[in-house]
Structures are given as structure tokens and as C-alpha cells.
Amino acid sequence: MFGKRGSDGGRRVEANFRPLGTPAPVPAAPPKPTPAHAAIIEPGSPTAVSSVRPAAPMREKSDGYYTTKSQVFAALIDTIDLSQLSKMEADAAREEIRDIVNDIIAIKNFAMSISEQEELLDDICNDVLGYGPLEPLLARDDIADIMVNGARKTYIEVDGKVQETGIRFRDNQQLLNICQRIVSQVGRRVDESSPICDARLPDGSRVNVIAPPLAIDGAVLTIRKFKKDKLTLDQLVRFGAISPHGAEILQIIGRVRCNVIISGGTGSGKTTLLNCLTRYIDQDERIITCEDSAELQLQQPHVVRLETRPPNLEGEGEVTMRDLVKNCLRMRPERIIVGEVRGPEVFDLLQAMNTGHDGSMGTIHSNSPRECLNRIEAMIAMGGFTLPPKTVREIIVGSVDIIIQAARLRDGSRRITHITEVVGMEGDVIITQDLLTYDIKGEDAQGRIIGEHVSTGIGRPAFWERARYYNEEQRLAAALDAMERAKP
Image (tube, rainbow, N blue to C red):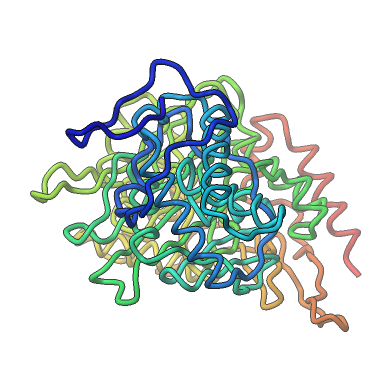
């Protein structure tokens, strides 16, 4: 597989691998690696990142380390045949790279400790097979967001707080190559002609890239990570995001096919909560999901996942969220789930909710249930619909049953702050009633917010008859009674 270059500039590929321990041919003056080297491995190949093992713990690396790494990387690229490497299994490819890097270090006589050498081996394997310096961050399950601001600055969010890391890239070109590798997995591209892109990682994590010339100091990469073990309502109860009786009511809401809008700000846990609610959908229902970047991971057997598509270079071929939602109606759905409603597709979702697709769900960015209703009206107006305001509100009242408000508090914790019913109209005003709210009491010595979920005393919610239809009224009554008795 590995061999010297022929006189014509090509590579002669050996029929068999060289014996382990045999020094690899290393040029006397290794050339500087070209940017394309970092993105030759195809993301869909067996050497994809999913099999790359976690790197060593993060720490600040010296400039001398990066100089040594660049020299070793250049010699490695000049020695191996990357087209053949991409055909190997990930573990075998990693071992071959490690053998050659060890030989290069020995021949070049770099003074390195064993731990430094192991760290260098991991870094170079990650550069060739995975996502380079991002690998140790992607391997951590406690990180919620990764924010790369150019090659020299990388921040993470842990427990709701943002902190800087010691991670950095070789240069802006390596960062851009990794961004291109990520977005190419879902058929997207990012370059000067198309500098903004949304994509996803194999585990469903959401990725946004904005590249030069729009990003002045180098490409900006933002990754919203999702835990490998998906959260459940029981876990949200343990974390204090919702009370046990509130979780019981959410289960009933998901079970009896209420039309639900999950409202909240950025990072408040809307997608996580949507994933939790979908666990209580019956196994025999046909569910169709529409998303800009596929993130939802439903456990039911009959799920159809749809994803929007941006326009090509000629500005053609775009498939919008509204196109997907409208097409859903022709696909015999029982529930339609829209990952994020941010435009005129809200009108089509409301129409679906009101035409026999009970139990449909979506998320909207807003800071309160009342603001959520106002945003729905505004998004309908954005779509160019010239309906009277009262008609729009009547459509909303006839479509939406429940608004669940999620929030990220100032201490970084996430809480469900309202479970609110849309009851009806009184004149031109939409009437709502809260079933449960979150009451903030203060904070402890560590600055953590102290609060509790409180019943508003509603004993017979508007979806009572729906609960009776699904034989859940006794369970609903018990949850409401227990919530009322738990009041201080």
C-alpha cells in the first residue's frame, strides 16, 4: 500500500503491506502539506469519525508542538497513498498511520516523551481519519455546544456555561477543510461562493458554518451536540426540569394526540423536549417529520424523515419547509412533526392540525406562551396571507391545544416553565390558561436558582374530553389532584 513516488510523479502501490517496524521511506525535505490533504478521506468511508477513539484530555499545546506536528504530518502525507488508505477499515488505517508516524519520529530524531508522542499520534490520526482537533470535544458527552471562532479560538458550553478551551487548528485552511468534510456528508457545500451552510454530524448533532469572506477572521463553526443517550421525561424529572406530576401530564398530552407547540429561546431544550414527547406516540401511527437539519430520533417503527434542501449555485432546486409540510398532507400522515417553525410554513402546519392530523407538533422560538401566539400571527403575515386578524386567531385556536414553554435560566439550568392550554376566543383575544408554572424562589450559595413547579388549580382542563376519548381521564385527574396537593 505504501511506496515511493515513481519517476512520473505518481505513486507505486505495493501489492502487500510492508512488515511492521520497517522504516517508511521519508523524504529528506518534506514538502509543506497542501490544504487538500486534510479532506481526502471520504466522510462516508469506513474510516469515518464514528470509529475514532477519544483523544487525550484537553490542554494548551505549545507552538513547538504544532511545528513538530506540521513536519511529521507533511512527511506522512508524502509517504502514504491516501486513496488506498480510505479503502481500509478504520482500526487498520489507524495502526498503519501510527506505525509510519513512529518511524518518522525516529528517523527525524524528534525529542519527545512517550506521552507527547502518543498525543501527537492521536492528533495526526484524527486529522487524517476524523475531524482533527474537534475529536476530543465530540467524544465528550457533557458538552452541549462547540463554538469555533477561527483557527485560534474554540469555546464549549458545559452545564449551561461557556468556557474557552486550549483547542486550536493548524491554520484557517485546516479549519475550512474540516467544515467542508462535515457538510459534504449531507450533500452540502461551503466555500466563497456558498459561505453559509447548515448540516449535521452522523449522530444528529446540528452544525452551522459561515466561511470567509463573510467570516473575517476565518471560518466560524458552531455544533449543537446531542447526547448519545437520549433524555427521557424521567431523566428531566431527576434534573428538576419538570415535576413528576407535570411529567405525567406531558405523557398524557402526547398520548391523547393534543396538538402541541413547544416554545422557548435558543438552547432552552426545545428539541430535547420534542424527542421526549414523541416517545408516547403509539407504535402503530404513521409519523412524518420535517426538518431543516434532521435531528429528531423517533423510536416508532413507522417514521418518514424529510429534510429541506438549499438552492444550488444557479439558485434553483430549493425545497423549503413549506414545500415539505404541504407535501406531507399527500402522504397519509397521522402525525406531522416540524422540527422548527420559523416562517410561513406555520400556516400549513395549523391547517394540518385542523384537518384530521391530531397530535401534530412543532417548536417555535419565543419567550412566553403569549408571545408564541403573537409570533404565529406574525409568521402567517410574513407568508403574504391577507386574512383578517380575527380569522387568523380563530385558526390558531382551532388548531393549537397546548403550548409548552421551555427556558434556560441564568444559572444555565433548563426548566419547563409553563404548560398552557389554548382555550378559545373572547372577542378578538385568544384565551389561554396555565395548568402548571415554574415559580422562582431565589438562589443558593453557589448561585443556582431555587424554584418549584406549581399547579394553578385547574381541575378540569380543556382537553378533558379528549383524555376521556383515549381512556386517560382517570390518570389525568389523579395527576392534577396530586399536583394540587403538592402546593405549599
